[in-house]
Length: 491
Ligand code: AMP
Image 1 (spheres, rainbow, N blue to C red):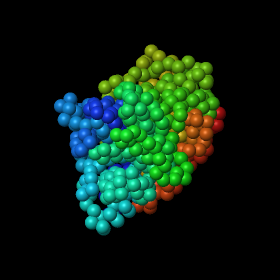
Image 2: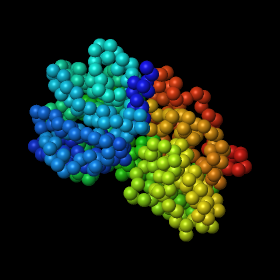
Image 3: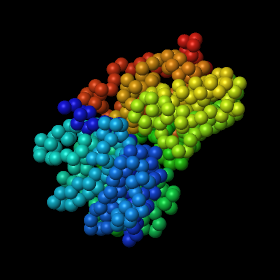
Image 4: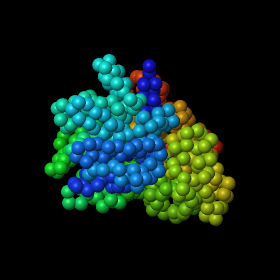
């Protein structure tokens, strides 16, 4: 049985996690609002597990957070300590049994676990555990992690978490609930984010992103560092190093696209980081044009940065429907294409007769950009220069971002000139990996850039890799191209 059969499509999971403790006060509503603020990290299933100090109760289902949790359900989840989870995965494993939190119990105790990221050695660990008689209820890699914790509870929950840090490889930002303890921890490379917040006098919150704190009145305390464990009990909160961190490898794509712009990571607001990415993009790929047009919403800060740096006016060129979710969620290509047209519609008066610079965060399959370029030309644009803040995405992600398989990645299938021709733009320019990193905090260390460079911070087992890639395509160092002429130029 190969990796995919064992783990379904679990390697394509995207998730948000939250943990809350407010001593003596019901916590389900706060957890619900935290998950609501993290809805962008996963829209397929959600769940909340609550402890009243004695028992853990849980509710999870398929759907969006506000579809799943009615006031009656929240009312039934009694207790002052909780964990919650949002999940998105591609179709294969989109089933309730893979929804989280994962509840496990042993003779020693019970836990509920919510995991963001992907283990790359889950199959190996699972086969070993199965050989020792372990039974699994789901195809999720997170269950492997949860079962390691529950099997080691005899040494106390914190020791059990240390065992996970020793055994598991890959990306894992996790929150764990026991009847009397809330624990959060990050893998030794810190690939996915996790922040700690303070909530009122004695309360704490742990969340994938700090944007979950504001709406419920929590304030950022600190980012959990790679390999650290945060332990929240009725006596307070402490942070300890769970395992030595060899280096930091935080996902660069979180900064470019995935995380919400109002979150803070690495000591910077993500909106500001994206503005700086736009400025750098203008430096790396300048072009003469009349207006800079963002692809809303994700392209807005970068377009503002591009406009500022280039001196070319920022102008909205399309509107976005508030009632449609990420087109990416649509499972097949035709639905994705209709989805783009439902989501974004042109503002013809702004576009007609203009040479535009169209700024977006990323090209994955190329569906969105191709349609938007056509939409701009159909609305009378004279030229459409596409500028993208993510460097070309050439390699699949094994650490918890759904980047599609290599065969589907536009920049992996085509050279940059071919891609520019495919999407039909006048020119195409990508921000460099170095430019994107420097825009975050001025450094070029501490990031996972695997989807752009193929440099995976942890070696990927052959079984996972074989589905994914062969030789890297020749995207080379350059990234600006003029379609039609079929040649590359560095401006
Ligand atoms: P595509 O049409 O496949 O090229 O998708 C590109 C668009 O999808 C980008 O403009 C992003 O806004 C969005 N996107 C990129 N990566 C992801 C992801 N992992 N999950 C959801 N949406 C994404």
